[in-house]
Picture: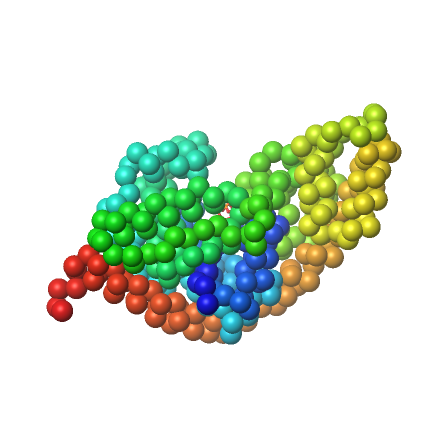
Length: 332
Ligand code: ATP
């Protein structure tokens, strides 16, 4: 079976972008692929050096993984820092990654703008750690959202560079995966950028939001007075509302509001009310189930322990190949 790897940073509760960009595909892939899904706690340190809430976030993301439908008996669920082989591979791959190419990465440039007081080396080498996450299991498919496309290209480069440098095909080429569809970007409700765990929390719908908060956020989403003539092109922020509606509403609702827009007869207040209720129908069961799971620390610890054991077997096998290719298995 093909090997799949993906992870989510433990930087807070998950949101709709994490769900539709990543998690939904994790769940769909668990039957047919050999899946490794992890909680990226090391990655979270690049932007969240304060570790007071970290343990809670790790438990939260794990509970949400399971609440969204991942079955620990079918997939390997683990915490990144439980797998020391990832750090070893990261160290080795860092010797093949160049400062210039890392500085050109779009996500690095964004972070330099967002946190000029903390431009740490971990931020710069983020794509190398992400490459190690993927290559440590020699994965070929990586279900991620659109924001990760460039990182996947870098992962292919680093892996191929290793293969050429040491003359062995240790690593296959990993590709971003969304069942043949374009990678998804779930927009934020303010019409600017993507939903995100760390930015503009009123414009992001979290899987932990209570019903009233969901209503409040959706009703505040950016709209305007509406089209004045039939078949007017949609502004981006209206397009975004329709995109969200296509994720959670049924076909008849979508058709109804699309026709109303094209007839220049749409009432955004009504559309947002319908969207809010459909959002609640989608989010509430995940929220309640994650809250229950979160209380059962014994169970979560068991899942983490068993996941780490399985993940380390695969990671250790890869590191053996790596050391051998590099001539670093001195005792043989
Ligand atoms: P942070 O705000 O802490 O950077 P994040 O919300 O961007 O976090 P990550 O943990 O960096 O989330 O990403 C986890 C997964 O969710 C990745 O596969 C990423 O592509 C996907 N993802 C995150 N935000 C979105 C979004 N708005 N639309 C689609 N996919 C997304």
